[in-house]
Image 1 (cartoon, each protein chain N blue to C red):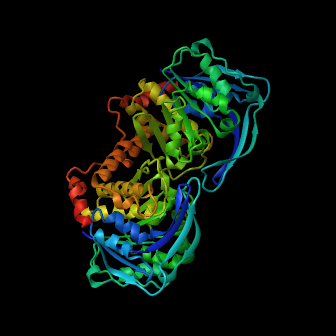
Image 2: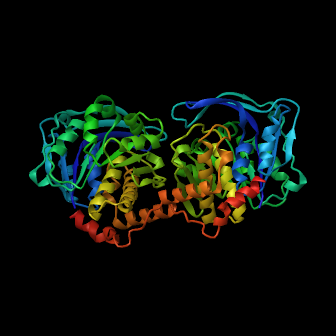
Image 3: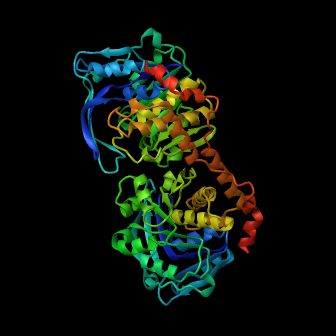
Amino acid sequence: MSVLVVGSLALDTVETPFGSREEVLGGSATYFSMAASYFSPIQLVGVVGADFPERHVQLLKNRRVDLAGLTKADGRTFRWRGRYCDQMNEAQTLDTELNVFEQFNPVLPSAFRDAPFVFLGNIDPDLQSRVLDQIDHRKLVAADTMNFWINRKGEALRKTLERVDLLFVNDTEARALSGESSTVRAARQILRMGPRVVVIKRGEYGVMLLDKHGFFSIPAYPTAEVRDPTGAGDSFAGGFMGFLARVGEVTPATLRQATAIGTVLASFTVEGFSLERLIDVTASQVAERFERLRRMTDLQPFAKDMALFQEESFRLLEG
Amino acid sequence: MSVLVVGSLALDTVETPFGSREEVLGGSATYFSMAASYFSPIQLVGVVGADFPERHVQLLKNRRVDLAGLTKADGRTFRWRGRYCDQMNEAQTLDTELNVFEQFNPVLPSAFRDAPFVFLGNIDPDLQSRVLDQIDHRKLVAADTMNFWINRKGEALRKTLERVDLLFVNDTEARALSGESSTVRAARQILRMGPRVVVIKRGEYGVMLLDKHGFFSIPAYPTAEVRDPTGAGDSFAGGFMGFLARVGEVTPATLRQATAIGTVLASFTVEGFSLERLIDVTASQVAERFERLRRMTDLQPFAKDMALFQEESFRLLEG
């Protein structure tokens, strides 16, 4: 099944302790599409300026991303400039030029209107709602957001959330959105706002997924080579949604597997600048990291040792 | 098998968004002993002042903690005063009175000298070494430390670490000790300093265990009721070591189970002030949370879906 993604395409200038890159390919829709394209056909809705290099368009086409929803507008492409310091867990935004993205009005080609899987990238919640107005059927709508919208367009965001099945947020955003200081409580609060699944991204600490069936938690893949964290969250969402669309079924088990696959895709992204590493992933590398994650989190029950936990042993020691 | 613990007993004054307590029972050896006592006999070495309430001594005795190594010195008991703010992930120390702890010289009763499992609480690394000098046989020596010692007594700490099998540290300490900014690299570096296992405590984000067999990672138990984080790390270590001593075998599987048991014990500690909640744990509650943690982290392989990860499907999409 296919995945529709609406979000940004950008030219990023990034600096990390491992080096820097000028005006490289970035944007939420870009990372998402690349990661998801390993699993499912992707339909992208976005806008670029007249200066957007043709080779970037070609890169997306080579991965069979359907670009019928990509507008080339007069003006300059959205630009972001940021820096990561020592621990690399948070970007410091040095400059944002919205450019053509400021007038972005997502219009879906008719062929995109019955997309079963939808990802609303981190854009104005009013635009997110406008996308949903144009969609006929859907199996799963996922959305991302950020503190900027939570603080400035809370009302609109609430309305969007009522129509969203799954929300991707990070720790801080979950707290800001819910007004709760504990992540667990924040997540539970978000489940009352509309989404039936909430996925909390915690950067190097991994991901927590909550729904009515309970919790699932998985660590980040422990790569020793974090060179540039840009796009990690969108690659995570891309791997997650691409995998779900490929399986075609949203169950507790596939949601967990999707979380692991998203984690794996994000781990490749952060090993290089821009999409350097992500575009060069092989299926066996994905499978290998998935299996490593599975072993890393494998906790065996202690059948024969269960006597350790009989009330008697407690009483005995209580004296 | 028994566990020897050397560390502090304290009177804590704590403030959190959920309330405050004055001069309640605290200290690393106290939390450790309580948590560990659910599983194994405990031998405690520490010092208290003449003002240490007899009811605290009785509480430890009731859990069959062997207090032959507890010195009652002239003077006041070690006191700590701290505050946790909104997110409660880090204590703000308002005041520390070392008092009798300043002259602490751990002397082991002869009956303690063949303890198979040893936990060196967070004390001066020279004292930690002095404890090891007095021990004849041992199966596993674990130690805790903190930035104060890493920065001020790095040399002595290095010497202790050469004799330690397992080190408990948090993220920040691991980075400070190794000089590495990535936690994964920091952990690997620590494995070159002596310990064959390193356990990195990440507070609400859970725990990562590293040894030559690889990684293990487990989230914190998602309790919605964090009232006072004091003692979480020591309760974790107590549950961990108590469990290992009870099983009597240190294997990759028991180390993982120990990590989960430690996580469970810590989750009870943070639900109340001081040892309020920890002293009132039942075996079935421990077993229940262990099982919940196991289900929370259970990731099934996708046998029939493995075709998703065949190189062909990647190539197909690459076009």
